[in-house]
Length: 246
Image 1 (cartoon, rainbow, N blue to C red):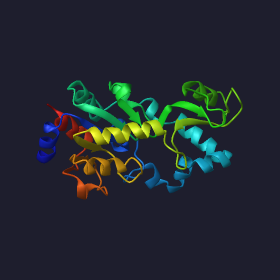
Image 2: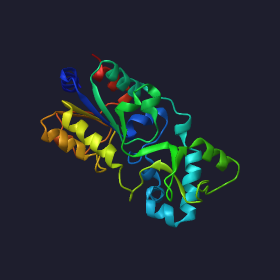
Image 3: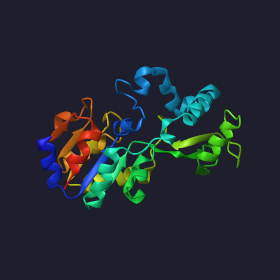
């Protein structure tokens, strides 16, 4: 922790990469941790595969019910999220790149223009046929009214949350912004990410290649711990506020 604090204190342009672990204290389970969604139910990974989603109405029905019941709708930002707002207010947050789809960074107070949602957002829906996008809440209302596989009201195509599933490509502009942030930052702070999903984990390689130190804050070991300048295994909500304090 002392080494991590010293590195963060010296940095002036910090690029932050967050994963599901930062939201677990808000009541949103991660995927690969000991109590993760996929750890407890490996079959649930099918719900995150675009090919299964498109081909199987049962998968879509399950996904929509999972969306409707998601704890993210009532979740509140935790001290880990608030700490990154404080980092922005200090003028030291270059860019906040997140793998999360819950929107809690923006709800905590981070400038949406400074947040890159690599994996999209669950707070909007998109039509896979015509590309029309809109807020999620009206679709949730249709589910509550009895629909189980709501279609696009514009063209009748398949609707899906505006998230990036396995088998879908990231938005090129978002990926370019994330890579540029890793290039330009003088420190990469990886928080709550397993660092196993590409291309998000590749941002660590970019930072290291540019000579920027990497600080990893995560409950479980990651493949990038060996290249990190410091690794902190303490609970994120407990340590992140102190780690980024001026």
